Length: 162
Image 1 (cartoon, helix red, strand yellow):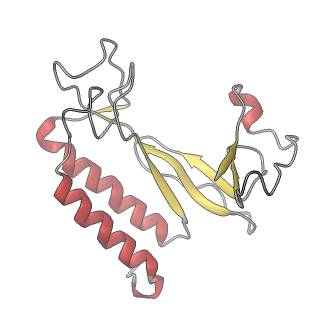
Image 2: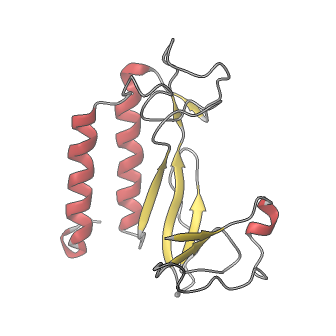
Image 3: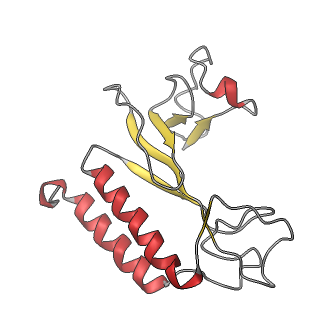
């Protein structure tokens, strides 16, 4: 998938951006953080996932949510920034609570959600995995089970109890 974006955040919401080509090197779908371009309407929420207003034309996606930060001494970049500080023993539960909110959005028409972020990066401690890729912060088995359950439910929306 390709995403229409600009380094200038103000222009990302600009409906005057030119239409993105429908086929670029085999890409069939286009998304955008913009004022109406692309096939995907995107909203970012921290920490809770959010959905954009439906327009009846585009898929609804929570393009960024989460930001659960946990510093693991000896495994982080020197600059430490996070959106929501979480204690080690509460990290998995906090993640699973956000995932339950993703499920709630699926009941409201959501087509997807993207957790921010997979790994810590320079200056941010929001990853599931530390900057040096040596420490996994959540309980992987618990996350795997919860994601598999959500995927199974979303594959059969009629079975979801919303």
